[in-house]
Length: 212
Image (tube, rainbow, N blue to C red; front, side):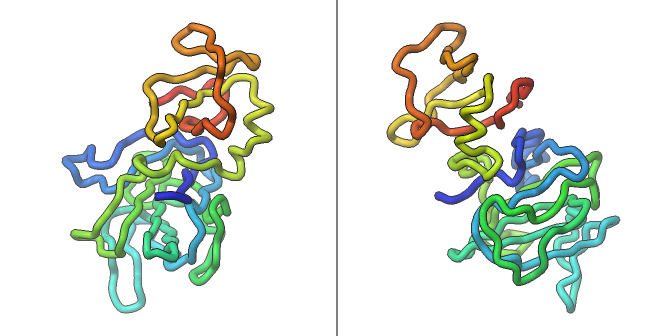
């Protein structure tokens, strides 16, 4: 699956899908209140709303998704894939808006049933809550750069955590640390370091960032 990016500028997973007795059908990303939440792909906004207290979403004739996700934005791609982000503080889009990957669609918060500010993100092939066909975003997200994770930013950062992507598209084990333009792997300097086209950003581009 191509064309999917992280909905956070500095993506860091704090809870994986399925970790609550298998019922957590998305992943949680760390965020500060008001952080921009990005569209993960090109598409159309199909839902904006939610009850900030209970997470119930009103569809015009009934409540749906009583799952505590609070203020929610859903975007549908041309092939039918739906992205849902929850617990938002506020919105930056309306139903019917056309968005591009990286557009700001809302702002991180803790609406709904939440223990703190974060971004809940799901990918689904339908809008059904019970029995809906969902995809773990972790398996498809780290494949492209966001607008904020541009080649310019990569060149400007002194230190960054990166992952070497094999020619088959699979990820080789281990992190590379780029320090002052010199590549290291587990503390050893590397020669023949790959070009930027061979790299996949997996952890944001900030010096103090630590992988979960």
